[in-house]
Image (cartoon, helix red, strand yellow):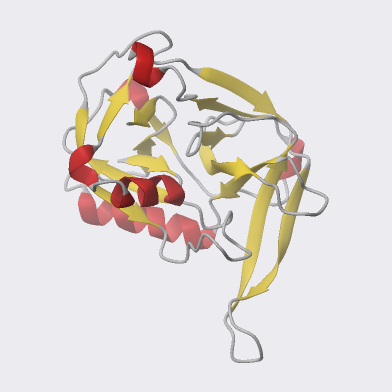
Amino acid sequence: QILTAAHVCDAILGQGGIQNWEVIAGEHGGFGYPPRQIKRAAMMPLYRGAILDKFTRDIGVITITDTYDPSLVTEFGEFDSETFSNQIYSWVGYPSDKIPSERDVYQWHDYGKPDSLDYFYFYNQPGEQGERRWVVDGYFKNLAAQGQSGSALINESGKIIGVLSSLTYDPGPHYGQLVFGLIDEINFEFIYYEIMNNLEDSRDRRLSSNRTKSR
């Protein structure tokens, strides 16, 4: 399976369905592995593109037909709010502008320290009957290019603890910043469920992530 953003899965399902997409993997400058067909593209059920916590739940899992080499597999875990702001993180993206014309992979590796961590309560319905849940987003002052959505946020221990969602243009202090949806307890449960229920031989908490791209 491949960890990505929910809006990437939404695009796959909305633009012809999984039969019109494939997953490629490779280092900078070339496709290193044969394409893989997509069996399933699952969005985090709480993801809604138009609500306040759209970044928080922008988590998706793609299940493919064949496995990749273990060298492409990266462990994932839950983020730690107490240490999050003290670490330097890395992520690898695939800006998509040259893929259609040159059919080649161009990696863009980046790293940075979080600018801030938003952690607050959110009601999905007005009034006391609404569901209240924690919302958490990680913001960086780095820039991103189209095609990098779904890139894994990797901590200093080498574990994936978030997914690149977007540059945010919502008015406020985070305008123009890079925002990651983080693997909190709720997102962790969704990812774990997708692994255990859609990969017969899965017995650990690992995902192919930071060196793959769907097209």
